[in-house]
Image (tube, rainbow, N blue to C red; front, side, top):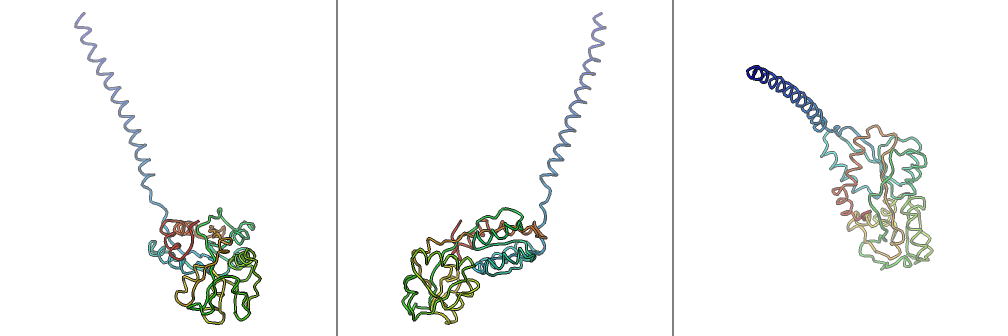
Length: 273
């Protein structure tokens, strides 16, 4: 009887061992399968950034965005960033009128709202920088301009941005805050046009952004004034609904908002959001 028990026991152990091995094998196979699936998902390459995009941007962004566009193309071979710079109001009107573009960077929330109200944006606009006004004078400030009030001198030729563009609206706000009434010799379509009047000595002074004064170098001299703190503009950026290359457009927006992008923008005189 003892031999009978001994005879069955190895068979039973062997059977249990075989079952255990089958179970382990199944678990291992399942784990391997899950691991392979997880691994293939984790190691899946990101979508390649390539192709062309068109960026509509406020005139005051020209220098810094041109630099960022060059950096973007260098980092992503096979891409091309084409810019259209101008007054934010006219750019917004072009977008709502059907002009093809992938990204809009405006110099004020008000002009961005023209685009969002028309539902031509693909995502919510995000503020990426801010900008402050300065008075641009001829080099050396020969007329000794020290304040907005000084611009009321009847012998001075002063230009402003048109009230419909952000720099003009900000100037109007600053003038109201300082209780100064100013009659310019002309209203210009964007901030670069206003500044250029001083550069060409067709005007003695202009109220423009500090970033444009800095970009002009020694061609003009900048004069700060306290009321500019009451008229700081937020700059929003958004992906547009009609974008034909959303991946590349989103990557450019990410660069603008990144630490690297902020470094370029603050070096140009912009304030962080």
